[in-house]
Length: 298
Image (tube, rainbow, N blue to C red):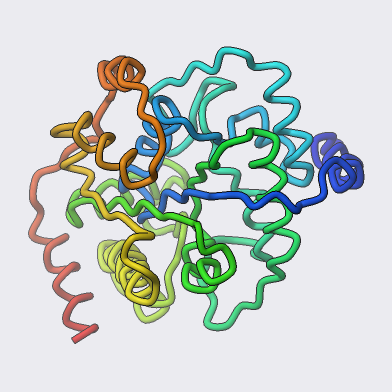
């Protein structure tokens, strides 16, 4: 079958480079965290009630022509309605946020979500594209990203007005949800899914629980170490449990940190429809897996 969308992207990419100069100085906000930590919900929440631009499901179809996609989205979607639902990170409405994975893989030079020991990025085309997207939307841009958090310190030096919102979930909850994600997406809890930090390379022959514990802990430890290298006013950490317990307080803190307007009525409306991620009973096997990873790190 012809991959018509890839063909269209290849053709449109030439046009895309002619639309804007890339000289606009964009401000970018990034939602980061381990998979199944609540990043999708947080991305939807901020996009729904804060004055930011974001990549919707229509724009995401044009990963090699992002400015064209942004223009098209602005032209065709006048009233952007957002749901508060997702299925393992996938949103339903055409106006819902999209994580723009193909764009980030292409732009950062990855074929997957595996962290590399040494990886050189050609930053100029990416920054030009981010500048162009923000110019189309005429506001700061919000993104949910994975591969970019392997390069937080480096990117921050290049775009000093960047801000990061890191969401962390209870490790037991996060690990159990990721094990379910493995089974749902691949048919087995033994098959790897989503972002893989360097730490996980030490545990490829261990149990599924230990592998996933290394994934969650490794990602969060990497983010923490990266944030130690940049200014404290450029990042904010929130707990998923706090977001669910008092979502209005959480979004108020986030909007203040990002220095963007919070549309209170939209926030109240979005909160009505929030469906929390599944909760699990405490599990001794999972706790032993967590202890194993912590012990390996000293």
